[in-house]
Length: 271
Ligand SMILES: C[S@@+](CC[C@H](N)C(=O)[O-])C[C@H]1O[C@@H](n2cnc3c(N)ncnc32)[C@H](O)[C@@H]1O
Image 1 (cartoon, rainbow, N blue to C red):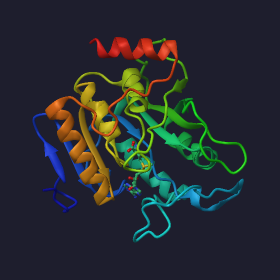
Image 2: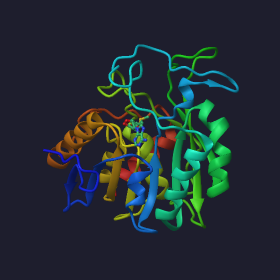
Image 3: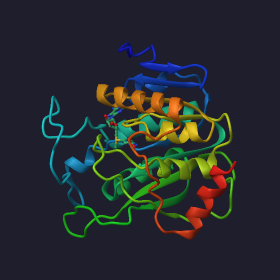
Image 4: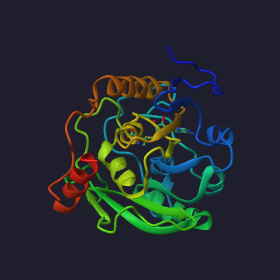
C-alpha cells in the first residue's frame, strides 16, 4: 500500500533509487537539499489553459472524463500566475546541481506568458517542439504540437550534437490517464542530457512516463504529484516495469517516421 504522509514516500524502491511522493510541486522540492538533483524533466498542469487569456480564450476542449472535486476538469491544475510559477522555478533552481539541464513542457498559451519567467531564472537554450504527428482539437488551427523549453543552470553540453529540435513522436491513443505523454518524449530529454546514475526529478509525475524513461536509462528518480490516482497509476506502472521490463500503459514505441530520431533511439537502446 502507498503512504499518504507528504514526508514519507508513497512508493519507494531503494534498490533502484526510485521514490514517489504525494505532494505538490512547490512543497516537494522544498524538502530536498540544495543541489541534489541532476536533471529536471516535467510537464506541469497549467491553469492558464482554462482561463480567459490575454491572447484569447484558452479552454481545454473535449470530453471531461474525470470530473470530481475539481468539477469539470480532468485533473488538478497548478496555479500558474507568474509569481507562483517563479516560486516553483526558484525551488527547481535551488535543488538542481550546477552545470545541469531542465526541460519544461508548455502548450502555446502558457509558453507565451511563462517563458519570460523561466528566462529570469535559468539560461534558456532552445524551444523544442514535440510534433504529435496527428492533429488534435483546437479553437482555430488544430493543434499538433507542444513546446519544451530546454534550459540550463550553468554550462553543460548535450550528450550528442546530432539531435534535432523537432521530435516526431505520436500521441498515446486512448490513455487510461488523460494527460499521459509518450515515454519517448522524456527519453529524448534523457538521451540529450542524462548520464547513468543521474538523479532525475519530475514534480508533475502524473502517469509516471518520466519515471519509466529514467529507469530505461539507469538513472535514479524522484517524483511527486498531488493526485492519488497519479500515485497509484505510476506505482503500478513502475512495479510492472521493474518485474517485466514492459512499459505497461504504453506497450508500443510511438516514435514517428523520422530517421534522425529512430537512429538516436536505436543507439540509446543498444547501450
Ligand atoms: C499534464 S499532467 C503530466 C503528464 C505526465 N507527464 C505523464 O506523461 O503522465 C500534470 C499533472 O500535474 C498534477 N498537478 C496539478 N497540480 C499540481 C501541483 N500543484 N503539484 C504537483 N502536481 C500537480 C496533476 O495531477 C497531473 O497529474
